[in-house]
Each structure stands twice: as C-alpha cells, then as structure tokens.
Length: 122
Image 1 (spheres, helix red, strand yellow):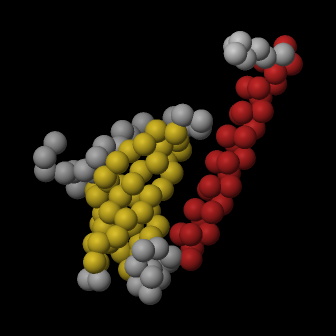
Image 2 (cartoon, rainbow, N blue to C red):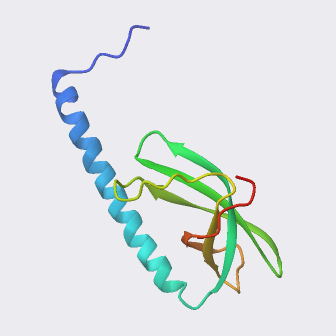
C-alpha cells in the first residue's frame, strides 16, 4: 500500500484543528478538575507515591499514576498533567504527592499537589 498523501488544505488546517482540540481538551480538564476539587473539599487527605509517568504523544500532557494507602488498604489513581511553560517541574517515579480521597469510596481520589518532601533514594 502506498504512503498516505495529504491534500494541501489538510497540511494547512491540520495544525489549526489540533491546536483547537488541545485547547478545548485542556479547558474541559480544568473545569472537571475544579469541580473535583470543590466536591472533595471535605474528604480525608493522604500522601501518595508516583509509580509511573506516561507521556501522551497526541497532546502536551503526561499521565501520572500513583498509589496511596488508607486504613482500609492500598489504592491507586491517576491524573493528567498538562505541560505548561510556567511549570517546568519534572515528575519522576517515587515523587510524593498530596491527595484527597473519599472516605466512603476509598478508590476515588483527587490530586492536590506535589509534596515538598523529596524521596530519600534520589
């Protein structure tokens, strides 16, 4: 099968459509995150550990997978970290994060921030 040939207008509008898609997805994510933070205001807080950092090649973001423990057991979650020029922090496996979790459903959690305490084994 021959290679994929783009029409001239696809080369022109492709980057514009992608930029628009990224912008819409980022705004939707920020709106959902704001609702999640408001909803979780009364939830318990815990500290978790980053287990993997997966780059999303379609969008300027990475998936951060973490785990945390409560009195009922160990749980995991993930969040998307959109790349931003004002946040040049590199996330590494083993980093500590602060999060909130739902005491009624421990597997529901919301990322708050990266902890100031650095892992010992760096």
